[in-house]
Image (cartoon, rainbow, N blue to C red; front, side, top):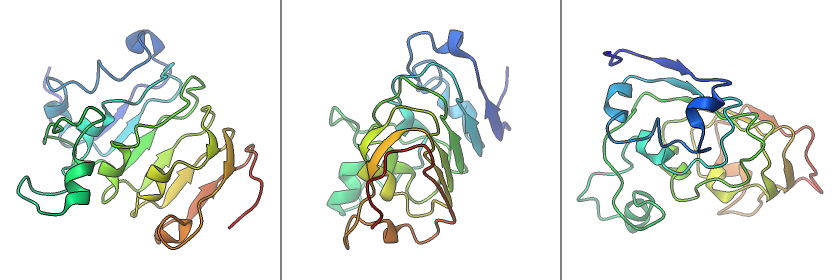
Length: 182
């Protein structure tokens, strides 16, 4: 069926479709082109333990001939292979809340959304320790929901601090183990 005009995709509470706990069914090169106009994606309570492959949904960071080494590095997946340059240039909101098996984020893929994503929901996952640096790279983010994880520290400093998130309006950290604020 043609989904090429789809702007919102809600797959909440659909653990049977994600039986392996990954995004393989959604983030495959065969499926991604039909999600070109996607603006909002909800994978709430899907039993996910990994977001590997989510970079396929990201808009390309730079043109393939871009000389910026940092951007070139961000365009490569965890295995150093060039990521598929397709995607969802309109994607602004991702909700992967209530996936308690999710303990880490794909640090090389999340920054691919840095210039586009405005809302990221990671409530009720099992992220622990310091706030992952890859989240701070999401410079257009306006809403960041991290309630009920095990976050202990927020980044500080010129290069890694929350001040980089100039558009951030909502930051939900309730139910975490924050030791101090920067």
